[in-house]
Amino acid sequence: MSGVEIYPGAAKARMRTLVTGGAGFVGSHLVEHLLDLGDDVVVLDDLSTGSARNLAGVADNPRLEMIHGSILNTKTVSAAMKDCDRVFHLAAAVGVKLIVEQPLRGLRINIHGTENVLTAAIEHQASVLMVSTSEVYGKNTADRLREDSDRILGDPLLSRWTYAGAKGIDEAFAKAYSDQEGLDVSIVRLFNTVGPRQTGRYGMVLPNLVGQALRGQPLTVFGDGQQTRCFSAVEDVVPAMVAIERDPRARGQAYNLGGAREISILDLASEIIRVLDSRSTIELVPYEQAYAPGFEDMRRRVPDNTKAHDLVGYEPHTSLTSTIMRVAADLLSRERLGSDAMPLSGVGAFRGVI
Ligand SMILES: NC(=O)c1ccc[n+]([C@@H]2O[C@H](COP(=O)([O-])OP(=O)(O)OC[C@H]3O[C@@H](n4cnc5c(N)ncnc54)[C@H](O)[C@@H]3O)[C@@H](O)[C@H]2O)c1
Image (cartoon, rainbow, N blue to C red; front, side, top):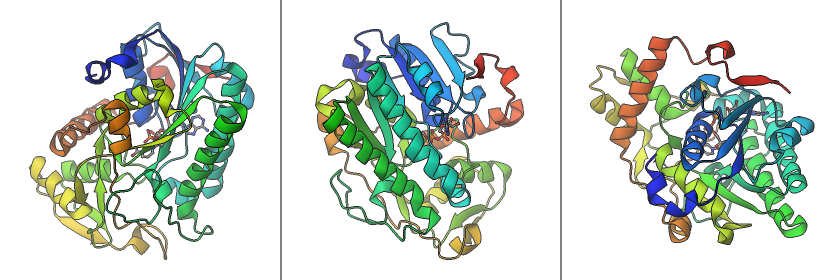
């Protein structure tokens, strides 16, 4: 991955690194990058939204160990962390659709699971990079969201806000463990990260729209489509995560990692049709139809990436056009190979459930 050159400091010493959620979209790219840097990597994943197939390209690497288990199991987490120098904590219940449909499961994984990871890190004296989300800013539509911007969240009884609530608690836990227990932990807040292997199954917009365009179906855009986002490419974000984890100045701090270009979802749909030369049309779908009555969305979400830029030189440079093309190629190859849900035996390297 290009980040090896971008952040040379990240490649210093050989590490043993645990990646929770390493079979997921972002996690699998991170695992590949860490192996490129020379780390020994342990993946802990329950394969609920991730897939062993995401790691098929590195499954034979002798420096990779894969454990099928849940962060909700304290013994499993502690066993996975044994002899690790650092932890990248990505395992989470993600995706608006999944969270709205199963709020209790999401709260348990995202709060109790994260605390299990943090306490095990203290036990094993490992440092932690915790992966949080721009969702913590909620409905704040500020021109550029800084890390200290206010959070504007809706009614806590609306399941839609439980993800933002839980990730906010996670950050507070991390900070408290850092301040009171001496845990070496830093936080990144990802903004709509996109790229190959992201699945549209749980409500992620870009792979959904690309899939519809490839099939020649109407691209379904929720609401009036004027809501805007800044998409960042996973290959820009992953090396920055590693560089932030290594920087002692990041301890107890949070960093935005987002894209540079603000685009409405309607314009995104048009761009996907253009780039893929698709014959699809665009269909506006009311939120109430897509989710539940009263569903709330953010009109705008624009990161201020200055803090990560000043710390490690983070600069998103991959174009949306190239990301759309790579996501399309990935979806087509998955379709050819069968499905996302390739059986574990198909990859073979996952150690049994512990
Ligand atoms: N992709 C984005 O745009 C985005 C944006 C903001 C934050 N994030 C954060 O990045 C991280 C990775 O997200 P992603 O987009 O790669 O999603 P993903 O669903 O592909 O990855 C999450 C992984 O965690 C695993 N997992 C879930 N529950 C688990 C449990 N109880 N025990 C062990 N593993 C479990 C899943 O199987 C999956 O492999 C998450 O923490 C998410 O909150 C992602």
